[in-house]
Image (cartoon, rainbow, N blue to C red):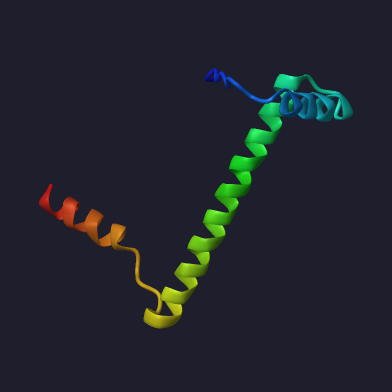
Amino acid sequence: MSDVRVRNLDSWVVDWFRAQAKQHGSSLEGELRRILTEAVVAKKRAMTNEMRSQLDVLRKKYGTFSDSAIGIREDRDARG
């Protein structure tokens, strides 16, 4: 795990997160960890959905391609 220090936050921002932490029965650090993790997970999901959408567009346009790994393995095995 990594440590992060955020400096020069306005007091009202820290107070808001502290209040949120209290509502969730968590520490300030725990609340910030939860919020940051949720933000990253949401971003990753959005990126994954976008990539799936783009892949669907490509499949509709070009069809489905075979897995090239099989041919590469066969070629390597043939060469020894």
